[in-house]
Image (cartoon, rainbow over all chains, first blue to last red; front, side, top):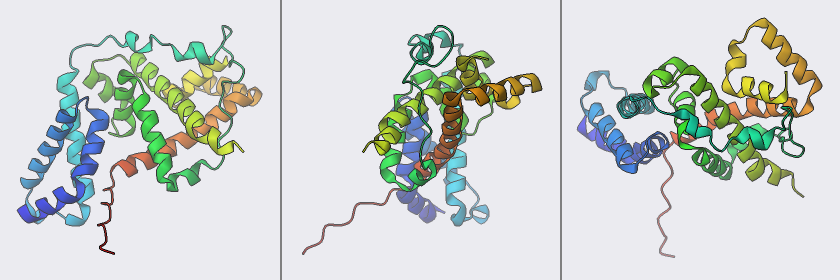
Length: 189
Length: 70
């Protein structure tokens, strides 16, 4: 098992670290979560370990390790109102609640095709990392850790209204960011 | 329903679980607002992109090629 674990560490450590750093606030914590995952791997029963399923094992364990750390870290209630001090809606919508002229993104052309492009993922990465910390935390738990809304609220000590605000903020900002940094450039002559 | 309310319902995820009256109001709003229609299409595409990005994050990066002696 130790030989297998060594091979897996070489192959997967960087990807796991990248994934963990998306959710945890410091590199040290992300490295600890990855280390905990690799330690848990060593404790697995060799007979029940299927090396062809290494990715599922590793990221399944890593998700749990990240969730445990988030739960410990954010058990105290947080003031999520401060996450929306820079109210994006004031930029997007007028006082009557309609789009401000020139702000709404046009329909993207061939969005599926972009998934083959490594450069595109760099831009997605940039946009995800530009999200404010609190909406980013809620959003990444939902989209990348596959947590349900109730679990996220309980882990982070937030209300359902906070959850909806965070998800909405993140999705709006991501669409605008991708539009301005990728799709609008694609349309430009 | 105003654009701001429709976009909040959509992006927060509330619309998925909303009752019939809200679903109909949202549909009516999409019919009359091309900006919200475009945003809705992009939001659906964004969901697929995030799935692709999640898979991309969980993929080992290819190490840089060894420099050749030539």
